[in-house]
Picture (cartoon, rainbow, N blue to C red):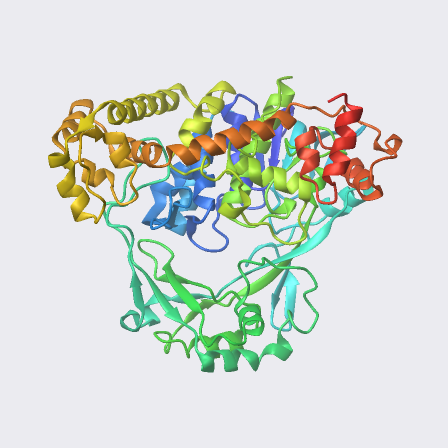
Length: 622
Protein backbone atom coordinates (compact mmCIF):
# COMPACT_ATOMS: atom_id res chain seq x y z
CA UNK A 1 0.00 0.00 0.00
CA UNK A 2 2.87 2.36 0.80
CA UNK A 3 5.74 1.24 -1.37
CA UNK A 4 7.26 4.70 -1.68
CA UNK A 5 8.99 6.66 1.05
CA UNK A 6 7.19 9.90 1.89
CA UNK A 7 9.16 13.06 2.53
CA UNK A 8 6.87 14.21 5.35
CA UNK A 9 4.27 12.23 7.30
CA UNK A 10 1.87 14.35 9.35
CA UNK A 11 0.05 12.55 12.17
CA UNK A 12 -3.28 14.18 13.03
CA UNK A 13 -5.72 16.20 10.94
CA UNK A 14 -6.59 19.10 13.27
CA UNK A 15 -5.54 22.70 12.76
CA UNK A 16 -1.84 21.99 13.32
CA UNK A 17 -1.83 18.87 11.14
CA UNK A 18 -3.76 20.48 8.32
CA UNK A 19 -1.41 23.47 8.14
CA UNK A 20 1.67 21.23 8.41
CA UNK A 21 0.50 19.02 5.55
CA UNK A 22 -0.45 22.00 3.38
CA UNK A 23 2.90 23.73 3.96
CA UNK A 24 5.18 20.77 3.25
CA UNK A 25 3.12 19.69 0.22
CA UNK A 26 2.94 23.19 -1.26
CA UNK A 27 6.70 23.56 -0.88
CA UNK A 28 7.20 20.37 -2.89
CA UNK A 29 7.57 17.57 -0.35
CA UNK A 30 5.66 14.34 -0.95
CA UNK A 31 3.34 14.44 2.07
CA UNK A 32 1.03 11.97 3.78
CA UNK A 33 -1.61 13.10 6.27
CA UNK A 34 -2.57 10.21 8.57
CA UNK A 35 -5.59 10.79 10.78
CA UNK A 36 -8.05 8.64 12.71
CA UNK A 37 -11.06 10.09 10.89
CA UNK A 38 -10.91 11.82 7.50
CA UNK A 39 -14.37 13.30 8.17
CA UNK A 40 -12.98 15.49 10.97
CA UNK A 41 -10.06 17.18 9.20
CA UNK A 42 -9.96 20.79 10.38
CA UNK A 43 -12.64 20.11 12.99
CA UNK A 44 -13.47 22.97 15.35
CA UNK A 45 -13.47 20.86 18.50
CA UNK A 46 -14.48 23.72 20.77
CA UNK A 47 -15.93 27.13 19.84
CA UNK A 48 -16.95 27.86 16.23
CA UNK A 49 -14.68 30.91 15.89
CA UNK A 50 -11.25 31.95 14.68
CA UNK A 51 -9.13 34.85 15.86
CA UNK A 52 -9.56 37.11 18.86
CA UNK A 53 -7.06 39.00 21.01
CA UNK A 54 -3.57 38.22 19.58
CA UNK A 55 -5.02 35.07 17.95
CA UNK A 56 -6.37 37.15 15.07
CA UNK A 57 -2.87 38.48 14.46
CA UNK A 58 -1.61 34.89 14.27
CA UNK A 59 -4.21 33.95 11.63
CA UNK A 60 -3.16 37.00 9.57
CA UNK A 61 0.48 35.90 9.90
CA UNK A 62 -0.33 32.36 8.79
CA UNK A 63 -2.10 33.80 5.76
CA UNK A 64 0.74 36.18 4.94
CA UNK A 65 3.19 33.28 4.88
CA UNK A 66 0.99 31.27 2.52
CA UNK A 67 -0.96 29.10 4.97
CA UNK A 68 -4.63 28.22 4.60
CA UNK A 69 -6.32 29.20 7.91
CA UNK A 70 -7.24 32.75 6.87
CA UNK A 71 -8.67 31.60 3.54
CA UNK A 72 -10.70 28.81 5.18
CA UNK A 73 -12.00 31.23 7.82
CA UNK A 74 -13.17 33.76 5.23
CA UNK A 75 -14.92 31.10 3.16
CA UNK A 76 -16.88 29.78 6.14
CA UNK A 77 -17.43 32.96 8.20
CA UNK A 78 -20.90 33.93 9.43
CA UNK A 79 -19.85 37.02 11.41
CA UNK A 80 -16.79 39.28 11.63
CA UNK A 81 -15.65 41.67 14.36
CA UNK A 82 -12.53 43.77 14.83
CA UNK A 83 -11.95 43.67 18.59
CA UNK A 84 -10.33 46.47 20.61
CA UNK A 85 -11.02 49.07 17.94
CA UNK A 86 -11.28 51.75 20.63
CA UNK A 87 -7.62 51.15 21.52
CA UNK A 88 -4.44 51.64 19.49
CA UNK A 89 -3.83 49.58 16.32
CA UNK A 90 -1.39 47.28 18.13
CA UNK A 91 -4.42 45.95 20.02
CA UNK A 92 -6.83 45.60 17.10
CA UNK A 93 -7.63 41.90 16.75
CA UNK A 94 -9.85 40.34 14.06
CA UNK A 95 -12.29 37.60 15.04
CA UNK A 96 -14.77 35.60 12.98
CA UNK A 97 -17.64 33.31 13.89
CA UNK A 98 -17.67 30.33 11.55
CA UNK A 99 -19.97 27.71 10.18
CA UNK A 100 -18.46 24.66 11.87
CA UNK A 101 -19.44 22.16 9.18
CA UNK A 102 -18.37 24.37 6.29
CA UNK A 103 -15.05 25.18 8.00
CA UNK A 104 -14.13 21.48 8.12
CA UNK A 105 -15.46 20.94 4.58
CA UNK A 106 -13.36 23.83 3.21
CA UNK A 107 -10.26 22.42 4.91
CA UNK A 108 -10.88 18.98 3.43
CA UNK A 109 -11.42 20.40 -0.06
CA UNK A 110 -8.37 22.68 0.20
CA UNK A 111 -6.11 19.78 1.18
CA UNK A 112 -7.55 17.48 -1.48
CA UNK A 113 -6.81 20.21 -4.01
CA UNK A 114 -3.18 20.46 -2.85
CA UNK A 115 -0.67 18.58 -5.06
CA UNK A 116 1.75 16.23 -3.27
CA UNK A 117 -0.72 15.62 -0.40
CA UNK A 118 -1.94 12.04 0.19
CA UNK A 119 -4.34 10.84 2.89
CA UNK A 120 -4.74 7.73 5.02
CA UNK A 121 -7.31 7.01 7.75
CA UNK A 122 -5.97 5.01 10.67
CA UNK A 123 -4.47 5.42 14.12
CA UNK A 124 -0.70 5.74 14.37
CA UNK A 125 0.41 3.52 17.26
CA UNK A 126 4.15 4.10 17.12
CA UNK A 127 7.13 5.66 15.44
CA UNK A 128 9.87 3.96 13.44
CA UNK A 129 13.23 5.16 14.77
CA UNK A 130 16.72 4.10 13.69
CA UNK A 131 19.90 5.53 15.22
CA UNK A 132 17.99 8.41 16.84
CA UNK A 133 16.44 9.35 13.50
CA UNK A 134 12.81 9.03 12.43
CA UNK A 135 12.20 6.74 9.47
CA UNK A 136 8.40 6.39 9.53
CA UNK A 137 5.31 5.42 11.53
CA UNK A 138 3.48 2.20 12.44
CA UNK A 139 -0.32 2.07 12.35
CA UNK A 140 -2.76 0.13 14.55
CA UNK A 141 -3.08 -2.45 11.76
CA UNK A 142 0.66 -3.03 11.93
CA UNK A 143 1.38 -1.24 8.65
CA UNK A 144 4.78 0.45 8.48
CA UNK A 145 4.78 3.67 6.45
CA UNK A 146 8.23 5.01 5.66
CA UNK A 147 8.90 8.73 5.88
CA UNK A 148 11.98 10.92 6.04
CA UNK A 149 10.35 13.33 8.51
CA UNK A 150 7.32 13.04 10.82
CA UNK A 151 5.22 15.83 12.35
CA UNK A 152 3.15 14.80 15.38
CA UNK A 153 0.00 16.92 15.86
CA UNK A 154 -2.04 14.67 18.15
CA UNK A 155 -4.11 17.36 19.85
CA UNK A 156 -5.99 16.04 22.88
CA UNK A 157 -5.93 12.43 21.67
CA UNK A 158 -2.79 11.05 23.38
CA UNK A 159 -4.27 8.87 26.13
CA UNK A 160 -7.25 11.22 26.18
CA UNK A 161 -9.64 10.80 29.11
CA UNK A 162 -13.07 12.47 29.08
CA UNK A 163 -14.76 13.49 32.36
CA UNK A 164 -18.48 14.21 32.90
CA UNK A 165 -19.23 14.29 36.63
CA UNK A 166 -18.21 11.00 38.21
CA UNK A 167 -18.17 9.29 34.79
CA UNK A 168 -14.95 9.01 32.84
CA UNK A 169 -14.03 7.22 29.64
CA UNK A 170 -11.23 7.18 27.09
CA UNK A 171 -11.57 9.54 24.16
CA UNK A 172 -9.74 12.23 22.27
CA UNK A 173 -12.94 14.17 21.57
CA UNK A 174 -16.67 13.48 22.08
CA UNK A 175 -17.53 10.39 20.04
CA UNK A 176 -13.91 9.63 19.08
CA UNK A 177 -11.46 7.21 20.69
CA UNK A 178 -8.14 8.16 22.27
CA UNK A 179 -4.75 7.49 20.64
CA UNK A 180 -2.43 5.14 22.49
CA UNK A 181 1.12 3.91 22.12
CA UNK A 182 3.02 7.06 21.12
CA UNK A 183 3.45 8.56 24.61
CA UNK A 184 4.73 5.28 26.03
CA UNK A 185 7.27 4.87 23.22
CA UNK A 186 8.54 8.45 23.49
CA UNK A 187 8.94 8.29 27.27
CA UNK A 188 10.86 5.01 26.86
CA UNK A 189 13.19 6.83 24.46
CA UNK A 190 13.79 9.53 27.08
CA UNK A 191 11.18 12.23 26.49
CA UNK A 192 9.51 13.91 29.45
CA UNK A 193 5.71 13.95 29.27
CA UNK A 194 2.95 15.50 31.35
CA UNK A 195 -0.83 15.84 31.51
CA UNK A 196 -3.01 18.84 30.74
CA UNK A 197 -6.72 19.48 30.81
CA UNK A 198 -9.14 21.43 28.69
CA UNK A 199 -12.90 21.60 28.60
CA UNK A 200 -15.88 22.46 26.45
CA UNK A 201 -19.44 23.65 27.18
CA UNK A 202 -22.75 21.99 26.35
CA UNK A 203 -24.16 22.34 22.82
CA UNK A 204 -27.86 23.20 22.80
CA UNK A 205 -30.82 23.46 20.45
CA UNK A 206 -31.23 27.08 19.34
CA UNK A 207 -34.98 26.51 18.75
CA UNK A 208 -35.41 26.07 22.51
CA UNK A 209 -33.86 29.46 23.41
CA UNK A 210 -35.65 32.78 23.95
CA UNK A 211 -33.34 35.30 22.28
CA UNK A 212 -35.65 38.21 23.18
CA UNK A 213 -34.35 37.90 26.77
CA UNK A 214 -30.71 38.18 25.66
CA UNK A 215 -28.48 41.04 24.49
CA UNK A 216 -27.84 40.93 20.74
CA UNK A 217 -24.20 40.91 19.63
CA UNK A 218 -24.07 41.84 15.93
CA UNK A 219 -21.01 41.81 13.69
CA UNK A 220 -19.26 44.93 12.36
CA UNK A 221 -21.27 47.16 10.05
CA UNK A 222 -18.40 47.07 7.56
CA UNK A 223 -16.92 43.62 8.11
CA UNK A 224 -13.34 42.93 7.08
CA UNK A 225 -11.79 39.52 6.53
CA UNK A 226 -8.65 37.56 7.39
CA UNK A 227 -6.90 36.70 4.14
CA UNK A 228 -4.94 39.22 2.11
CA UNK A 229 -6.13 37.42 -1.03
CA UNK A 230 -9.46 37.85 -2.87
CA UNK A 231 -11.54 35.82 -0.42
CA UNK A 232 -15.22 36.72 0.04
CA UNK A 233 -16.28 39.60 2.29
CA UNK A 234 -19.45 39.05 4.33
CA UNK A 235 -22.52 40.80 2.94
CA UNK A 236 -24.84 39.09 5.43
CA UNK A 237 -24.07 38.09 9.02
CA UNK A 238 -25.60 36.04 11.82
CA UNK A 239 -26.03 37.64 15.22
CA UNK A 240 -24.58 36.25 18.42
CA UNK A 241 -26.19 36.92 21.79
CA UNK A 242 -25.14 37.46 25.39
CA UNK A 243 -26.75 36.32 28.63
CA UNK A 244 -25.49 36.01 32.20
CA UNK A 245 -25.38 33.51 35.00
CA UNK A 246 -26.94 34.55 38.33
CA UNK A 247 -26.89 33.64 42.00
CA UNK A 248 -29.40 30.80 41.52
CA UNK A 249 -27.33 29.31 38.70
CA UNK A 250 -24.25 29.42 40.93
CA UNK A 251 -26.09 27.73 43.81
CA UNK A 252 -27.34 24.97 41.53
CA UNK A 253 -23.86 24.41 40.17
CA UNK A 254 -22.37 24.24 43.67
CA UNK A 255 -24.78 21.41 44.50
CA UNK A 256 -22.80 19.25 42.10
CA UNK A 257 -19.32 20.18 43.36
CA UNK A 258 -19.00 16.97 45.37
CA UNK A 259 -19.46 15.06 42.09
CA UNK A 260 -17.13 17.36 40.14
CA UNK A 261 -13.94 15.68 38.87
CA UNK A 262 -12.20 19.04 39.31
CA UNK A 263 -12.90 19.17 43.04
CA UNK A 264 -12.96 15.49 44.05
CA UNK A 265 -9.44 14.77 42.76
CA UNK A 266 -10.24 12.80 39.61
CA UNK A 267 -8.72 15.55 37.44
CA UNK A 268 -5.15 16.14 38.56
CA UNK A 269 -3.84 18.10 35.57
CA UNK A 270 -3.87 21.87 35.01
CA UNK A 271 -6.43 23.55 32.76
CA UNK A 272 -6.20 26.79 30.78
CA UNK A 273 -5.84 29.78 33.11
CA UNK A 274 -7.65 32.20 30.79
CA UNK A 275 -10.51 29.93 29.80
CA UNK A 276 -11.63 28.38 33.11
CA UNK A 277 -14.65 26.16 33.57
CA UNK A 278 -17.84 27.68 34.99
CA UNK A 279 -17.38 25.77 38.26
CA UNK A 280 -13.81 27.08 38.51
CA UNK A 281 -15.03 30.65 37.89
CA UNK A 282 -17.70 30.61 40.60
CA UNK A 283 -15.26 28.94 43.00
CA UNK A 284 -12.36 31.36 42.36
CA UNK A 285 -14.51 34.47 42.01
CA UNK A 286 -17.09 33.76 44.71
CA UNK A 287 -17.79 37.49 45.11
CA UNK A 288 -19.07 37.83 41.53
CA UNK A 289 -22.82 37.42 41.22
CA UNK A 290 -22.84 36.89 37.44
CA UNK A 291 -20.63 35.74 34.58
CA UNK A 292 -21.11 36.47 30.89
CA UNK A 293 -22.31 33.75 28.54
CA UNK A 294 -21.92 34.23 24.80
CA UNK A 295 -24.50 32.39 22.72
CA UNK A 296 -22.85 31.52 19.41
CA UNK A 297 -24.59 29.91 16.41
CA UNK A 298 -22.70 26.95 14.93
CA UNK A 299 -23.48 27.84 11.31
CA UNK A 300 -25.78 29.34 8.71
CA UNK A 301 -28.34 26.54 8.61
CA UNK A 302 -27.92 24.44 11.75
CA UNK A 303 -29.87 25.12 14.96
CA UNK A 304 -26.96 23.94 17.13
CA UNK A 305 -25.66 26.62 19.50
CA UNK A 306 -22.39 26.88 21.44
CA UNK A 307 -22.67 28.31 24.98
CA UNK A 308 -19.36 30.14 25.31
CA UNK A 309 -18.44 30.72 28.97
CA UNK A 310 -20.18 27.63 30.34
CA UNK A 311 -17.34 25.12 29.91
CA UNK A 312 -17.88 22.41 32.50
CA UNK A 313 -17.23 18.84 33.60
CA UNK A 314 -20.04 18.74 36.16
CA UNK A 315 -22.61 15.92 35.99
CA UNK A 316 -24.96 16.30 33.04
CA UNK A 317 -28.05 16.65 35.26
CA UNK A 318 -26.38 19.52 37.17
CA UNK A 319 -25.40 21.23 33.91
CA UNK A 320 -28.96 20.98 32.61
CA UNK A 321 -30.63 22.15 35.82
CA UNK A 322 -28.30 25.16 36.20
CA UNK A 323 -28.43 26.25 32.56
CA UNK A 324 -32.26 26.30 32.66
CA UNK A 325 -31.99 29.08 35.26
CA UNK A 326 -30.10 31.36 32.85
CA UNK A 327 -32.23 34.07 31.25
CA UNK A 328 -33.38 32.87 27.82
CA UNK A 329 -32.48 29.23 28.56
CA UNK A 330 -35.59 28.34 30.60
CA UNK A 331 -36.69 25.69 28.06
CA UNK A 332 -33.26 24.67 26.80
CA UNK A 333 -32.75 21.33 25.08
CA UNK A 334 -29.28 19.77 25.10
CA UNK A 335 -27.57 18.37 22.03
CA UNK A 336 -24.78 17.13 24.30
CA UNK A 337 -23.37 18.04 27.72
CA UNK A 338 -20.07 19.77 28.33
CA UNK A 339 -17.06 17.75 29.39
CA UNK A 340 -13.41 18.03 30.42
CA UNK A 341 -10.61 16.09 28.78
CA UNK A 342 -7.17 15.19 30.09
CA UNK A 343 -4.42 14.36 27.62
CA UNK A 344 -0.65 13.88 27.34
CA UNK A 345 1.70 16.64 26.27
CA UNK A 346 5.47 16.99 26.03
CA UNK A 347 7.15 20.04 27.63
CA UNK A 348 8.31 22.08 24.63
CA UNK A 349 11.77 22.83 26.05
CA UNK A 350 12.59 19.45 24.45
CA UNK A 351 12.32 21.08 21.01
CA UNK A 352 14.47 23.31 18.84
CA UNK A 353 13.13 26.58 17.43
CA UNK A 354 12.25 24.69 14.25
CA UNK A 355 9.94 22.49 16.43
CA UNK A 356 12.19 19.50 15.73
CA UNK A 357 12.83 17.37 18.80
CA UNK A 358 16.31 17.38 20.30
CA UNK A 359 16.31 13.63 20.93
CA UNK A 360 15.15 12.34 17.53
CA UNK A 361 16.23 13.88 14.24
CA UNK A 362 13.48 14.83 11.77
CA UNK A 363 10.70 14.37 14.34
CA UNK A 364 8.59 17.51 14.89
CA UNK A 365 5.85 18.36 17.42
CA UNK A 366 3.11 20.93 16.78
CA UNK A 367 -0.05 22.04 18.59
CA UNK A 368 -1.46 20.84 21.89
CA UNK A 369 1.23 18.18 22.15
CA UNK A 370 3.48 21.17 22.99
CA UNK A 371 1.21 22.42 25.77
CA UNK A 372 -0.61 25.17 23.87
CA UNK A 373 -4.34 25.85 23.65
CA UNK A 374 -6.29 27.34 20.75
CA UNK A 375 -6.80 26.64 17.06
CA UNK A 376 -4.65 29.58 16.02
CA UNK A 377 -1.64 28.68 18.19
CA UNK A 378 -1.85 25.10 16.90
CA UNK A 379 -2.17 26.11 13.25
CA UNK A 380 0.86 28.41 13.40
CA UNK A 381 3.01 25.66 14.92
CA UNK A 382 1.84 23.20 12.28
CA UNK A 383 2.75 25.67 9.55
CA UNK A 384 6.25 26.20 10.98
CA UNK A 385 6.84 22.49 11.54
CA UNK A 386 5.75 21.66 7.96
CA UNK A 387 7.99 24.40 6.57
CA UNK A 388 11.03 23.33 8.58
CA UNK A 389 10.58 19.63 7.91
CA UNK A 390 10.66 20.38 4.16
CA UNK A 391 13.63 22.75 4.42
CA UNK A 392 15.72 20.31 6.45
CA UNK A 393 15.11 17.50 3.98
CA UNK A 394 16.26 19.82 1.19
CA UNK A 395 19.40 20.75 3.14
CA UNK A 396 18.32 24.40 3.38
CA UNK A 397 18.56 26.86 6.27
CA UNK A 398 15.82 26.57 8.92
CA UNK A 399 12.97 29.10 8.97
CA UNK A 400 12.82 30.79 12.38
CA UNK A 401 10.81 33.94 13.09
CA UNK A 402 12.20 36.33 15.68
CA UNK A 403 10.18 37.99 18.42
CA UNK A 404 10.13 41.33 16.60
CA UNK A 405 8.99 39.69 13.35
CA UNK A 406 5.82 37.82 14.31
CA UNK A 407 3.55 36.67 17.11
CA UNK A 408 4.41 33.20 15.80
CA UNK A 409 8.02 33.97 16.73
CA UNK A 410 6.98 35.06 20.23
CA UNK A 411 4.86 31.91 20.69
CA UNK A 412 7.57 29.46 19.67
CA UNK A 413 10.34 31.29 21.51
CA UNK A 414 8.26 31.34 24.70
CA UNK A 415 7.59 27.60 24.40
CA UNK A 416 11.16 26.57 23.61
CA UNK A 417 12.86 28.96 26.03
CA UNK A 418 10.48 29.09 28.99
CA UNK A 419 8.37 25.96 28.59
CA UNK A 420 4.86 25.82 30.00
CA UNK A 421 3.17 23.97 32.85
CA UNK A 422 -0.34 25.08 31.91
CA UNK A 423 -2.05 25.40 28.52
CA UNK A 424 -0.29 28.32 26.79
CA UNK A 425 -2.46 30.96 25.16
CA UNK A 426 -1.20 33.94 23.17
CA UNK A 427 -1.93 37.50 24.30
CA UNK A 428 -0.77 40.83 22.93
CA UNK A 429 0.92 41.43 26.29
CA UNK A 430 3.32 38.54 25.62
CA UNK A 431 4.86 40.46 22.70
CA UNK A 432 7.31 43.21 23.66
CA UNK A 433 7.13 44.60 20.10
CA UNK A 434 3.39 44.59 19.58
CA UNK A 435 3.40 48.00 17.87
CA UNK A 436 5.43 46.34 15.11
CA UNK A 437 3.37 43.13 15.13
CA UNK A 438 -0.01 44.50 14.09
CA UNK A 439 -2.71 42.59 12.26
CA UNK A 440 -2.78 45.16 9.43
CA UNK A 441 0.88 44.71 8.43
CA UNK A 442 1.33 40.94 8.69
CA UNK A 443 1.66 40.74 4.90
CA UNK A 444 4.32 43.47 4.82
CA UNK A 445 6.27 41.66 7.54
CA UNK A 446 5.99 38.09 6.37
CA UNK A 447 4.92 37.64 2.74
CA UNK A 448 8.45 38.35 1.38
CA UNK A 449 9.76 35.68 3.78
CA UNK A 450 7.03 33.24 2.73
CA UNK A 451 7.85 33.86 -0.93
CA UNK A 452 11.57 33.44 -0.33
CA UNK A 453 11.17 29.95 1.15
CA UNK A 454 8.81 28.91 -1.65
CA UNK A 455 5.46 28.87 0.18
CA UNK A 456 3.77 32.21 -0.60
CA UNK A 457 2.90 32.47 -4.30
CA UNK A 458 4.09 35.29 -6.56
CA UNK A 459 0.60 36.78 -6.92
CA UNK A 460 0.45 37.17 -3.13
CA UNK A 461 3.83 38.93 -3.16
CA UNK A 462 2.72 41.30 -5.94
CA UNK A 463 -0.44 42.24 -4.01
CA UNK A 464 1.67 43.00 -0.94
CA UNK A 465 4.15 45.09 -2.95
CA UNK A 466 1.30 47.04 -4.53
CA UNK A 467 -0.19 47.78 -1.10
CA UNK A 468 3.22 48.80 0.24
CA UNK A 469 3.97 51.13 -2.69
CA UNK A 470 0.57 52.82 -2.48
CA UNK A 471 0.63 53.31 1.29
CA UNK A 472 4.22 54.65 1.22
CA UNK A 473 3.27 57.06 -1.56
CA UNK A 474 0.23 58.22 0.43
CA UNK A 475 2.34 58.76 3.57
CA UNK A 476 4.78 60.80 1.49
CA UNK A 477 1.87 62.83 0.10
CA UNK A 478 0.89 63.79 3.67
CA UNK A 479 4.51 64.68 4.48
CA UNK A 480 4.86 66.95 1.46
CA UNK A 481 1.41 68.55 1.18
CA UNK A 482 0.45 71.61 3.19
CA UNK A 483 -3.00 72.61 4.34
CA UNK A 484 -4.32 76.12 4.98
CA UNK A 485 -5.94 77.14 8.28
CA UNK A 486 -9.28 77.89 6.60
CA UNK A 487 -9.31 74.35 5.14
CA UNK A 488 -8.38 72.37 8.25
CA UNK A 489 -9.72 74.49 11.15
CA UNK A 490 -13.40 73.56 10.62
CA UNK A 491 -12.37 69.89 10.95
CA UNK A 492 -10.22 70.57 14.02
CA UNK A 493 -13.03 72.52 15.62
CA UNK A 494 -15.45 69.61 15.06
CA UNK A 495 -13.18 67.26 17.02
CA UNK A 496 -12.37 69.81 19.74
CA UNK A 497 -8.70 70.06 18.71
CA UNK A 498 -6.56 73.24 18.83
CA UNK A 499 -6.85 75.35 15.69
CA UNK A 500 -3.85 76.19 13.51
CA UNK A 501 -2.85 79.80 12.77
CA UNK A 502 -0.77 79.18 9.67
CA UNK A 503 -0.25 76.73 6.87
CA UNK A 504 1.14 73.39 8.08
CA UNK A 505 2.00 69.97 6.67
CA UNK A 506 -0.92 67.54 6.56
CA UNK A 507 1.24 64.86 8.23
CA UNK A 508 1.54 66.96 11.38
CA UNK A 509 -2.20 67.67 11.57
CA UNK A 510 -3.11 64.07 10.76
CA UNK A 511 -0.88 62.90 13.63
CA UNK A 512 -3.27 64.43 16.17
CA UNK A 513 -5.19 61.78 18.20
CA UNK A 514 -8.73 62.89 17.28
CA UNK A 515 -8.11 63.42 13.56
CA UNK A 516 -8.97 60.36 11.48
CA UNK A 517 -8.64 59.38 7.83
CA UNK A 518 -12.33 60.07 7.48
CA UNK A 519 -11.69 63.68 8.53
CA UNK A 520 -8.73 64.06 6.19
CA UNK A 521 -10.79 62.70 3.30
CA UNK A 522 -12.96 65.83 3.61
CA UNK A 523 -10.01 67.79 2.17
CA UNK A 524 -10.19 68.00 -1.62
CA UNK A 525 -6.45 67.20 -2.27
CA UNK A 526 -6.70 64.06 -0.13
CA UNK A 527 -9.91 62.73 -1.70
CA UNK A 528 -8.49 63.49 -5.15
CA UNK A 529 -5.28 61.55 -4.37
CA UNK A 530 -7.32 58.57 -3.16
CA UNK A 531 -9.52 58.54 -6.27
CA UNK A 532 -6.63 59.08 -8.67
CA UNK A 533 -4.57 56.23 -7.19
CA UNK A 534 -7.54 53.90 -6.57
CA UNK A 535 -6.67 53.38 -2.90
CA UNK A 536 -8.71 50.71 -1.10
CA UNK A 537 -9.64 50.48 2.59
CA UNK A 538 -6.58 48.33 3.33
CA UNK A 539 -4.20 51.02 2.02
CA UNK A 540 -6.08 53.78 3.84
CA UNK A 541 -5.86 51.90 7.14
CA UNK A 542 -2.14 51.13 6.66
CA UNK A 543 -1.41 54.78 5.83
CA UNK A 544 -3.29 56.09 8.85
CA UNK A 545 -1.39 53.78 11.20
CA UNK A 546 1.96 54.76 9.66
CA UNK A 547 1.19 58.47 10.06
CA UNK A 548 -0.31 58.45 13.53
CA UNK A 549 2.11 55.97 15.12
CA UNK A 550 5.32 56.74 13.21
CA UNK A 551 7.15 57.83 16.37
CA UNK A 552 6.19 54.74 18.37
CA UNK A 553 7.03 52.44 15.46
CA UNK A 554 10.47 54.02 14.96
CA UNK A 555 11.25 53.76 18.69
CA UNK A 556 10.21 50.12 18.86
CA UNK A 557 12.29 49.26 15.79
CA UNK A 558 15.31 50.87 17.44
CA UNK A 559 14.80 48.82 20.62
CA UNK A 560 14.37 45.63 18.58
CA UNK A 561 17.55 46.33 16.61
CA UNK A 562 19.51 46.78 19.84
CA UNK A 563 18.33 43.47 21.28
CA UNK A 564 18.74 41.67 17.96
CA UNK A 565 22.49 42.26 18.20
CA UNK A 566 22.50 39.52 20.81
CA UNK A 567 20.67 37.26 18.31
CA UNK A 568 23.82 37.42 16.20
CA UNK A 569 25.99 36.08 19.01
CA UNK A 570 25.72 32.33 18.43
CA UNK A 571 26.43 29.70 21.08
CA UNK A 572 28.33 26.71 19.68
CA UNK A 573 26.33 23.50 19.31
CA UNK A 574 26.71 21.07 22.25
CA UNK A 575 28.43 23.79 24.28
CA UNK A 576 29.74 22.43 27.61
CA UNK A 577 28.29 24.77 30.25
CA UNK A 578 29.74 22.70 33.10
CA UNK A 579 33.23 24.15 32.45
CA UNK A 580 31.99 27.69 33.18
CA UNK A 581 32.24 27.61 36.97
CA UNK A 582 31.23 31.28 37.21
CA UNK A 583 27.72 30.41 36.02
CA UNK A 584 25.14 29.83 38.73
CA UNK A 585 24.14 26.21 39.28
CA UNK A 586 20.57 26.95 38.09
CA UNK A 587 21.85 28.65 34.94
CA UNK A 588 24.09 25.69 34.10
CA UNK A 589 21.20 23.26 34.51
CA UNK A 590 18.73 25.36 32.49
CA UNK A 591 21.22 26.13 29.69
CA UNK A 592 22.24 22.49 29.44
CA UNK A 593 18.60 21.38 29.19
CA UNK A 594 17.30 24.02 26.75
CA UNK A 595 20.49 24.40 24.66
CA UNK A 596 19.86 27.96 23.43
CA UNK A 597 21.35 28.79 20.06
CA UNK A 598 21.99 32.50 20.72
CA UNK A 599 22.87 34.74 23.66
CA UNK A 600 19.53 36.51 23.17
CA UNK A 601 17.61 33.28 23.64
CA UNK A 602 19.74 32.37 26.67
CA UNK A 603 18.88 35.73 28.27
CA UNK A 604 15.14 34.90 28.14
CA UNK A 605 15.46 31.61 30.04
CA UNK A 606 13.93 31.77 33.51
CA UNK A 607 16.73 31.42 36.06
CA UNK A 608 19.50 32.76 33.82
CA UNK A 609 20.58 36.12 35.28
CA UNK A 610 22.29 39.10 33.57
CA UNK A 611 25.47 38.07 35.43
CA UNK A 612 25.28 34.63 33.79
CA UNK A 613 24.88 36.28 30.39
CA UNK A 614 27.97 38.42 31.08
CA UNK A 615 29.96 35.26 31.84
CA UNK A 616 28.87 33.72 28.54
CA UNK A 617 29.67 36.90 26.58
CA UNK A 618 33.16 37.08 28.10
CA UNK A 619 33.82 33.43 27.33
CA UNK A 620 32.63 33.86 23.73
CA UNK A 621 34.96 36.85 23.31
CA UNK A 622 32.16 39.45 23.19
